[in-house]
Each structure stands twice: as C-alpha cells, then as structure tokens.
Length: 74
Image (cartoon, rainbow, N blue to C red; front, side, top):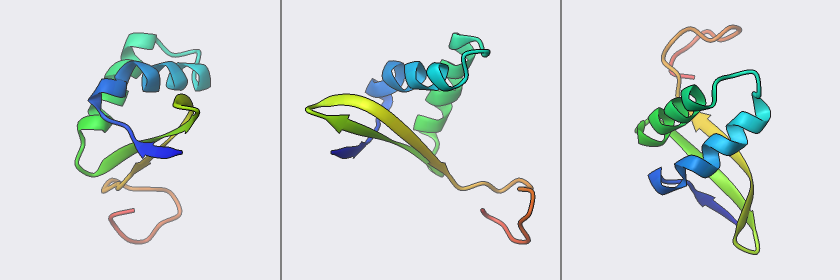
C-alpha cells in the first residue's frame, strides 16, 4: 500500500532519510523532512507492507534552477 505521509509520520520519514544519508546530522534531516511535509508544493509518500512502512519517496515542485532544464517549475 502507498499513502501520503503527514506530520505524524515525521520520525519515520526522518529515519528513512538518515538511512539514505547517514553522513548528515539526524536533527537537520528531521527538520528538512518537516519542512517538506508542511510544504504545499511537496509531498512524501510511504510504502507500507502489512501496515509497516518500508520505504518512502519525496516529490516536490522546484522553482529554483535545476540543471538540465529550461523551464520552471520543475
């Protein structure tokens, strides 16, 4: 099952982010994930098996320069 994450999933999302980027400071990643969860131009989806989250994906519209693009937003 896939569902949209919400602010109540912050710790789960931060834990997954830390697994991907272990050289970062956990609290910094947690703050970044919180900003994404609260951003109207972004979302995070959780993938669950038997109700247990096993992965996530983050999607976001970007209005800054993105290498290789010629339009905005991306």
